[in-house]
Amino acid sequence: MADRDGVIWMDGKLVDWRDAKIHVLTHTLHYGMGVFEGVRAYNTTQGTAIFRLPEHTKRLLNSAKIFQMKVPFDFDTLSQAQLQVVRENKLESCYLRPIIWIGSEKLGIAAKQNTVHVAVAAWTWGAYLGEEGLQRGIRVKTSSYTRHHVNVSLVRAKASGYYINSILANQEVTAHGYDEAMMLDTDGYVSEGAGENLFIVKNGKLYTPDLASCLDGITRDSVMTIARDLGYDVIEKRITRDEVYCADEAFFTGTAAEVTPIRELDDRQIGIGSRGPVTERIQATFFDAVNGRNPQYAHWLTLV
Ligand code: PMP
Image (cartoon, rainbow, N blue to C red; front, side, top):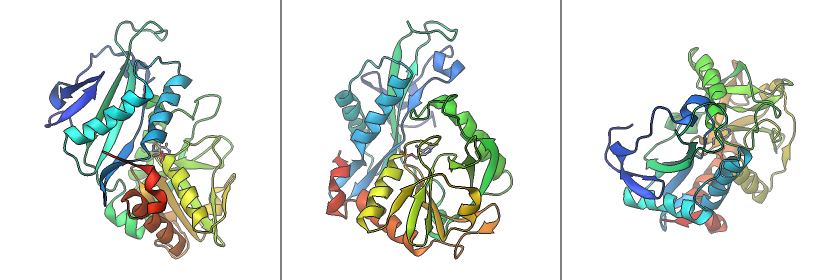
């Protein structure tokens, strides 16, 4: 990814893609305390627009706040930086990666005096779990690795180091041919995917795990709003893995994964074993929203 044309916003300046480098003694590289976002821009009917830009920027700054990282840029500057990288790279639709990290002045875990840095990159990235996954659904396996505990990791933050846990889970299940991992919390209840929130549909109602151990996903929030607008009840609660086996439908949500149906969990077919009707309706409304085809959700789009 390092060798390509384009520009990356780094600490207030646009830098050539190949020159966007940091030192090997960067604190975040050693200890994992960095915070980041995954954001998407879509080629909407009104032109290219970033989906839920204020919410992503707010979550990024809240992640930094949780770790007491003093970000040298404000909300407006970071919002503009994201719009700028899409524009300058002439991207019609893309994935954006804003990241905040701790500099290389000093190693050792105490680094209060170290500088804090920000970069925003953007590039084209298609369906994270595959186009076929969006249509037919994916095969998911429960990982043997437990999701974060609230008093070990502060899960309202989207932090670099947390993804070791996601990578372990994803590696474990993809090695056996599954598409993605499902993770359980420390009490054994369903938490989320390695990089996605989970929903199930049962008797016409939607259920999703409460926010104790999973990320407060922005797609999760969008889907809850869409589902309620379509007339479905949405309930946040503890969910067991066998509730997922016996659900009528299940799907993952995420900026990268968008709305991806789950056709199987732990080798049990879920519902009809492909994208169910409620998932299809919510997914279609979601894609209308992100692509600017539904005026009801126009406020979720910031034109580039
Ligand atoms: N959970 C985890 C662990 C994630 O990495 C992501 C992706 N950011 C999500 C859930 C979904 O969050 P969002 O919809 O905000 O992308």
